[in-house]
Picture 1: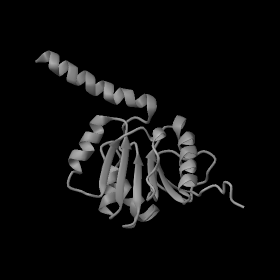
Picture 2: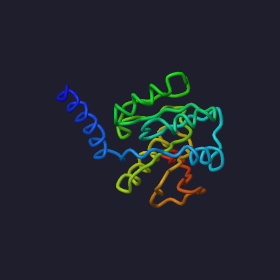
Picture 3: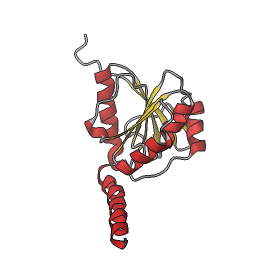
Picture 4: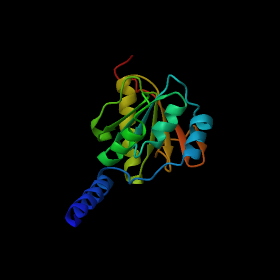
Length: 174
């Protein structure tokens, strides 16, 4: 029995530790701050589709869905995705996927991207989001928590949240 407990513990430690090399560490978002971000900083609408990069335990997804939006999370840690799916199992507006954001294409209906990132990744995330705005040929609203996008001025700030807009590049258009 002790051996099984050891292997379960080791798997959990590896799952959480592994993610740190490819993304941000797991830092739970505070519901009160999310409510303010989704009502004061950028009031979510029922036709919004919120993408949470590094969705963790799904608190951002659940808060976005409580405002009527569809919420889709991408998370590297399969344990956190399982937790999100279990807690959110009765909410049809929430989806959680085990996926690496660097390897996905945003859904066509994406309107808002929420992210918490460490400083080593925030610039690269901005580049990826700019590429996706161009590919989708639409404006994407980005809400960051805890860090700002280098080389971009936020439209608004509220506490640790910053609001940005990414517009498509006019590639090949005259």
